Amino acid sequence: ASAALDAMRKAGITNPQLMGINRKPLAPDELTDPLVIVFDILPRTPQNLSSVGLNLASLPGPALALRSALESGSVAATAPLNLVQLPGIPAVVAYVPVLQGEEESLSATGFVGFSFVLEKLLKPVLDDDM
Image (tube, rainbow, N blue to C red; front, side, top):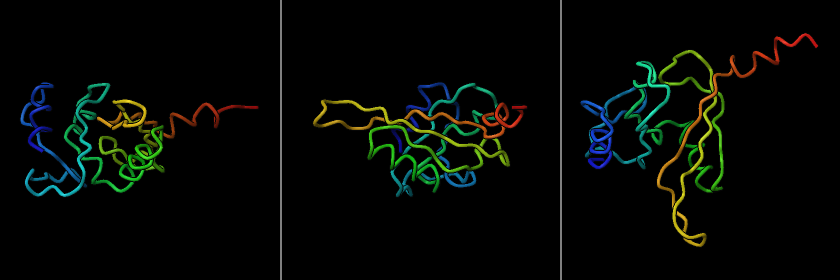
């Protein structure tokens, strides 16, 4: 946990903290979940930056997708959920593990996540007059 906080400080996050469900602050010495911390997010809007420090492994939907991505070594997506930074707006998040090592001994060093707001994703299909 202290390594995660140090990495966040090095990335320019002032007063970093780890968060769980409902952005509840997590004390580093109380963590039991594996840590999958949001370190960076684009675009860097105030809304998006509010999710920096979030432990994705403590959230049921993302935790399931992260586990699936790790086991398959490929992309895995959540079921529709509300993004922390956009409450009340359904989205899907796809995660891809970042792997290192030789083929026989690959290990994940992190994940890259891509969020898709469902309304924006489906609007062209729903507005099509075909």
